[in-house]
Length: 220
Image (cartoon, rainbow, N blue to C red; front, side, top):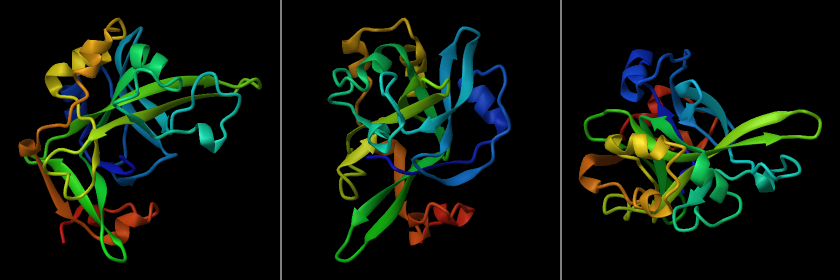
């Protein structure tokens, strides 16, 4: 699964990387957790945009926003068929910009957190889906989920799953709402090549969502 990540990228760099017209001011985050609002890149009528979405997808058909409808991860193997995700997979895909993400390695009496990032330190994008939910009282929420797949060779000793990373060359295909070919989309949901990533253990302080400091990503 993917339950935590971090993002510390200058606005100009985000703007250039995703070819955005504008980027709102974002605060550097080092321990982003489910149920929080996160940055996401998607296509709109005005072009590509950075939107702020609730992390925990709420299907458009949900009667309310109870927690059992809030899903942070969608499995790559079933995302095209599960009722909660299949419409978003066809029409409402997004990119979740990150500097890195965390996974936990089970140990005898505890779990050791690891940070995973690109070897070159550059930002990258997790595969996401987004939905618009409208309540009977007029309340609306835009939410999202991260797609996960099998771990690659680097992650396997730490955890059996990892988020899908969309390669830069595939941004156009992934974000294009007109692209609805399931075979083409499924082909993008592979474990990212291990040789481009690095993983290192970090402080257990990251276990506490309230601990959101640069020290979270300091190797130990």
